[in-house]
Image 1 (spheres, rainbow, N blue to C red):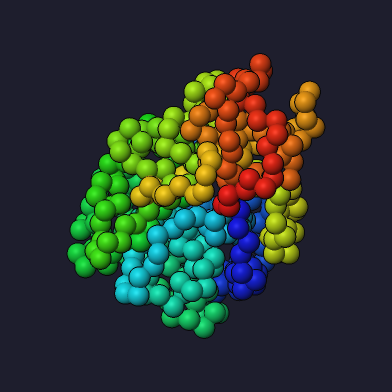
Image 2: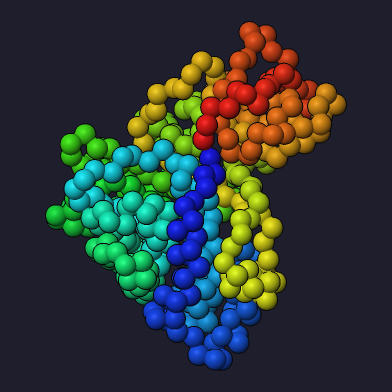
Length: 382
């Protein structure tokens, strides 16, 4: 699930500060106060969420903090997962990305970085947010990054609109080309009334376009309890309305974590990759150094054909010790939660194929189906 990115992608991410210096240069005072501003914005987004009604796009210091710390970390997180998504194929003609709650065009920037072959495609970006300022900054950043890479810039269309405003493709642009992807990045956790409110915005979008192209809808949230629960809520509502969960879910049945109730939430934790030196340094100075990244995600779209013989399952947990095996892992499947024995070498987030006996033994603690002789050779890919 966590695919490696081309070297070129990370090299261009290293040059993000060059683009930021042209779009929103820091004064010497702003540069000195940047670590403190980063720490303040981190508190606002976590422990002080009751103050979220105050837009951080109205504060110069918090704007700088977002652009220099949160934007690049979000790009790092997205770069770690985009290559593993079963995205629809891109045609030869004009295509469109609709990004809801876009901020500084985080998802389009990540897609531009992640897929060098997309940079020369005529990809129209239709970005929506309740504030126009971050959208304008993101448009300028994408233009600067394109200049640094020496490729034509994607056409960008900006729409100031509340996140929960119901819209159709025609409202955004009367001449919009076929939609390739609809994206919601870090949106669900900021909605006060629940994740299901975004589904009316997607009516018709999965089947919009022409020539048989069907776009997908991508959601990514922080791997917090709130972010993961929001993804699980959205998935349950979407499946009930006839949508298909394409990734990371290996099935379209009830989520085993919902079935268990209580505290579990769907998320994945991976070691933090080697990040640009400037970002690592700022993280340490702000007291927010990272050893790992946590995220929750969901891709809705057409159903995918099964692969090979066996039951698809997605590995959810890090390895842990049980009485029977020191390297067990939990996995999600259509038959419920699985407990894979001897699975320490299978990465978190990987999809595997398993064989479940007719009368399996259940783990007394988790009630997961025990597969003690799971073999690493069962890997089925991302």
